[in-house]
Amino acid sequence: MEIVKVGMADLKITSAPNRLRTTGLGSCVGITLYDPQKHLAGMAHVMLPSSDLSRGPINVAKFADTAIPELLRRLEGEGASRTRIVAKMAGGAQMFAFSAQSDVMRIGPRNVEACKAVLTQYKIPLVSEDTGGNVGRTVEIDSLTGILYVRTINQEEKGI
Image (tube, rainbow, N blue to C red; front, side, top):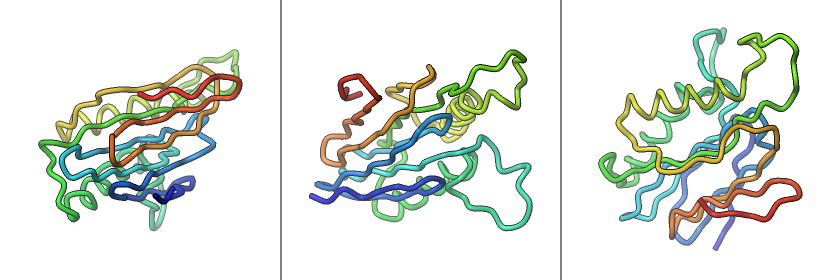
């Protein structure tokens, strides 16, 4: 079993018995797609909700609106079926307190909302999430079982 690291603004896929792990999820979202029949898993470390404001060549893994379709494309290329794929996600925290509730500063909640919108667009069910709050997270998906393990500081690991 190998643990494949997914960096910030990165995405990867793997198959059983391997796992995918990303760390440092504050306002970022760790979005996972999983085909339980093929035991294929994909993970993206999404930093921002939309590529609309990006200039020049973009890193597709950085944005919710481009990372999720790319994960789907890669998983389907390995034999996954969109009709079987389910999603789980964690992260999207509001890491800092701001007196003004400016939408610009709501990056965590906006990342969560954007991921949900893209999943709805592609008809992928979101079966579990651990989002919001004000804690950082580390997540790891087991491509054999589809369990997404979530670790936060000073709390026990939980599987969702």
